Image (cartoon, rainbow, N blue to C red):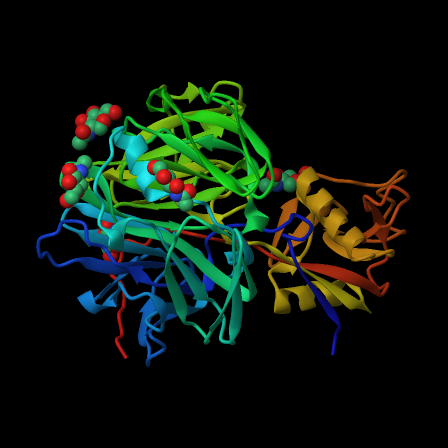
Length: 556
Ligand SMILES: *[C@@H]1O[C@H](CO)[C@@H](O)[C@H](O)[C@H]1NC(C)=O
Ligand SMILES: *[C@@H]1O[C@H](CO)[C@@H](O)[C@H](O)[C@H]1NC(C)=O
Ligand SMILES: *[C@@H]1O[C@H](CO)[C@@H](O)[C@H](O)[C@H]1NC(C)=O
Ligand SMILES: *[C@@H]1O[C@H](CO)[C@@H](O)[C@H](O)[C@H]1NC(C)=O
Ligand SMILES: *[C@@H]1O[C@H](CO)[C@@H](O)[C@H](O)[C@H]1NC(C)=O
């Protein structure tokens, strides 16, 4: 048995907040938009990123529906009317999705032309500490319309939904201004409460999903829109973000909540201070002219509110390398935010986005552009992180952040499975190492450029590898020329990182190893191929492609 150290390339790059996962949980909140009887549509759109993904959908923990998905082929699962949860208190009617490989999941709630979509966050993005924004419904409506309105008691506040993301009993503490309330949630159940504006924090023993929802936020005379806002846990709070200009919308407010006193500035925001554990609605009068860069003195929870829509801007910290964009209407737009210097390298599927419509965002390094869309696409950048939103319009505008498929930019597209390094700790000769790497991975690793060399050095340093290792570089027995051996194929060397006096002559050796030189950047050295050394195997990244074929459905 050989000893292997398995290392993901993501090492040392911090948490990534892409929306990929194998476990998701949500509920479908009440949608009373349009008071007259009209059948609602409550559905999930599930997209697999790898072939042959088996997906199970459980309702109230009951025997699951099972589907086998092709990569990039969205599956729509539509539910009966009874899925909507209007009860308060503990509720067992949750919808749980689990899969054998990574998927992304979006929920859609539609009644008449009131539509809400939400990217359901996977288990890995849920948290145990949340700050609750104090969304005061009557204040919000009064601010929108500058007049008092009569609101029925049942609908005069937002609802707070807390969903137990674990197969365990989960104690949830809701901290209010003067008291604390403790609730015990059974595995995969939820709690729905009417907010009264005094809730400030949630602490749970295990991970929970938290949503704020309202069945019918008034937008205009006799019209309203169901609103759903899944909160991010406190660990994801950030202080810098671009607030997107939502197309076909004229009134905007930034809603800021923080656990500490904080001040907000930037864009055309009046500089203002928000007290600890309080919230403010800050007007953004000219946001309709273009997106704005906002800065907050302390990490805070913030959302963009406008009549009938609440969205959580993608903070700078949560920008990603690649997004999936799916739309359901013919009037859909993607708002792309990229660093001005790199904005001409944004790709849509396999094509560069060549646009003259980019506009720079004041006091920031960013630019934004609005692009018309149909169908399903990926938007990605080969070297820097970008932000992407999707907005659609029926009578009301709906949408929000696009689905992040991969946090880290990759020059070849959307790397939904990052590359993987395996350090083989058992010493072997170069031919043995080469054969063994082909068996367990793609190849014995050979750095092909400066970045790859630096990434390898980082990994070896992180693992405290203070010794020599084989790489996939050797010389031809016939010509003595050096080449890279990548699995079965060989390639001329276009990049080298030889130490001083290297490469040595054929008498010194026919193979190359890396050694821990004083600056620990692992220079290359000519080595006798029969020496027994540790080695580093490499599995290439896997990329997402959109499949135009029909999905194979197998209802169990
Ligand atoms: C909500 O706002 C109204 C004013 O529109 C105010 O009278 C009320 O006290 C606020 N509620 C809370 C809990 O802050
Ligand atoms: C609100 O309802 C009360 C009682 O039904 C009524 O007297 C009042 O005029 C209404 N106010 C508005 C602003 O519609
Ligand atoms: C939305 O705004 C765009 C311009 O930004 C305009 O061309 C389009 O007609 C508007 N759509 C609707 C439905 O109002
Ligand atoms: C959900 O997927 C279906 C295809 O199964 C597609 O027609 C629809 O537009 C999608 N909805 C959204 C909101 O992306
Ligand atoms: C590799 O190098 C050899 C010798 O220098 C040369 O003849 C050959 O054309 C090169 N191959 C490629 C693909 O560049």
